[in-house]
Image 1 (tube, helix red, strand yellow):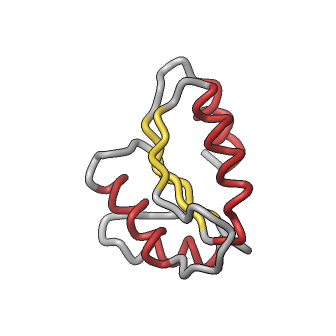
Image 2: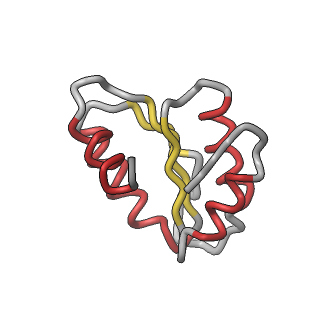
Image 3: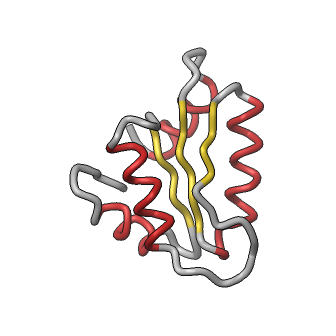
Length: 100
């Protein structure tokens, strides 16, 4: 399942999901928009930050999202930032998680 298919599934599925989400300051506005879309679709969203556009380091946020998925507290995790590449690498450092 590619990213577009996963997003369509998460938004449109009748089975409601728990989704962990996090971003750095560069992804803050997109994250806020996506939270609204997912919640309107009936999903439970746990926001691991950041909570403003002030500059912040993304690795701890991405690791928290990844741990939530690994530990079964969320079915899906979404991390975002300026490019998404560093965020993906940070999430992949959590043992047992594969971010793409």
